[in-house]
Image (cartoon, rainbow, N blue to C red):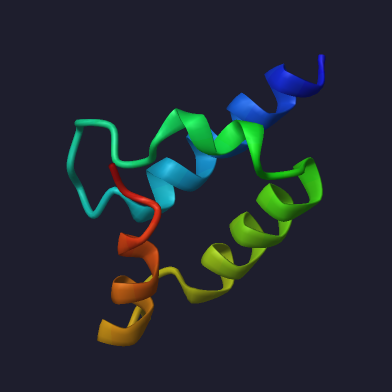
Length: 66
């Protein structure tokens, strides 16, 4: 159940950082290391920044890509 929630949150985060690409951008192995709270916080921060991502934000997000 927890892994399902993590996968859903990871999928939602991936859609937020995909920049219009259709291929996967996040390494699924991150699920092992991130808690649900970590994923919720990341998603919330991304939602706050959607549409106004700076180059610095994009660089930060790159660390989560495969």
